[in-house]
Image 1 (cartoon, rainbow, N blue to C red):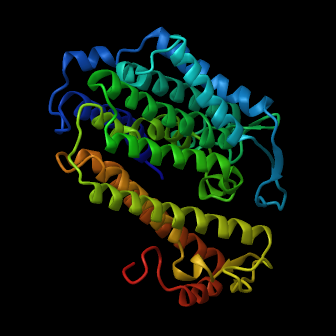
Image 2 (cartoon, rainbow, N blue to C red; image 1 turned 90 degrees about the vertical axis):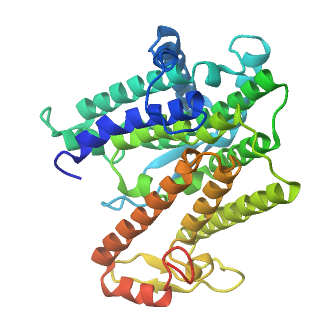
Image 3 (cartoon, rainbow, N blue to C red; image 1 turned 120 degrees about the vertical axis):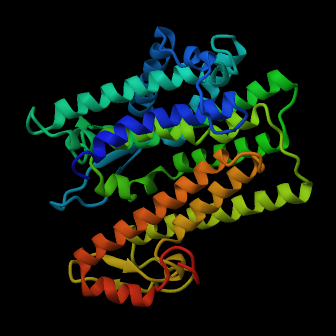
Length: 397
């Protein structure tokens, strides 16, 4: 991305997150055309929330460094070398939940903090993210006069402090785990305000906790994702991980605090089935490719794996889930996103932003991946596309 694009995104995206929150929390889900004074006050930066966020980031960094865990090698870099990563996300997930429960039970932090201080916490995360991106720019740019697009997209692919990988850490810990705590806190807010947690809220929290916990349990699979393998680490990924993920992915729960859509048991069961099916497709396909990269001789669905051997060396898996579509894992993500949004009912379109965002993001990512693979593998990629016709949704796309 060149020109004014990065500047416009950095100017537009943070206010957009505030607008979504204000619309859902202060306008009953109607698109906000005005900003209430109480919303401005709620979003005002405070030293307490800034210190809390810095402490949160530091806690997660400390857990990543000191907790026991296995060490694995990432995928090969351009020069053929591999970086080593320490994996302890599953243990960090449970310790984080335990510490949050302890803080709530002892009164150190109010259980409904995410509802009561959502705006101020969002502001603290924004301030931290911009400062962190500026530090990355200054620390890893080859020149102090690096262009703005370097600040936006990143100066380094794998910035590290000693052996501590900053990109992998931010992609997996402070943002994802904060998302889990935010939705739990919003459920606590519903309990405090209305005396019960509704079935849609309970299912949403369950679905999203399983999603985050699954990411931590299968932390090694993240090492083969697009972001880790191909993206530099700058404002885009830092802000996206630290702000966008916890404060937009939790907006369905924000809406459900004061709204309880009427669903029959059958409708709730259908939504749950959609989420489970999406999860199975998402996780099983990602694990299948990850295991294939580790051991191409491993059977796929009980048979020898079929693949395209490229002239450049890498093997393109063309069986199992990856014989059905080139990115069936994206379909699973979209199915889960839709299930989460359906739990909010149909009173406002804004709670469906997440599903629309995931659809646009993943289709765009698939198109970009296709173009890069075509340029990299040439005729081998063309043969692969003939072998696996569909991109994401078999029979349609």
